Image (tube, rainbow, N blue to C red):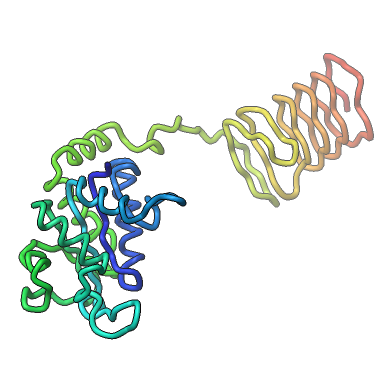
Length: 265
């Protein structure tokens, strides 16, 4: 089961829950975070799934916004949602506290600190849990503090985070691309190690010029402005239309299809 259970109230914290969920997945893997709207599959018994996930998690992260404490009951709007023993936000937190599972309250924006007197009896321990702040003006630093708190509470996740940092992210492992393009004017340039499936262009390690340039280059040679089709291994220059040969083609020609070893001008 996931190590982190993300508890939040619909209408008061979904965006924060989503951000934390994504960062947990990036740091530790998507299977280490449970967020109901993402983790419960269609057809699953959500009551059993939620109960099993909260009972087996290593830490519960409670997302608490400005409206969290006094959110009205969803069924009739009368009274507070927290005063209903069957309210899922209350139920999940109360279960975690009863099991001795660490709970990290995350107070976002202007949410006030919790007081025991304002909470149902089975949730009062939440007011004694050390919390973290999360503000929309300091998302990056606040998100980092939440993740660090999780790593302290769950050492095995901290070890996963350390290994990920040492190994580097997948993006840092992509082979470095050296730019060897020549000057290009009047168009947009993209360089690719493998460039396939776009307008029937395919191949490896070549310059691709979009805009005021030739149309197709399927050979390893270089294609210059105004050329239309190049199937050969030589270079093709201004005004040429078709080049199937292995030499260089320079100047204005309508068709050059014969195979040759020299240059056509």
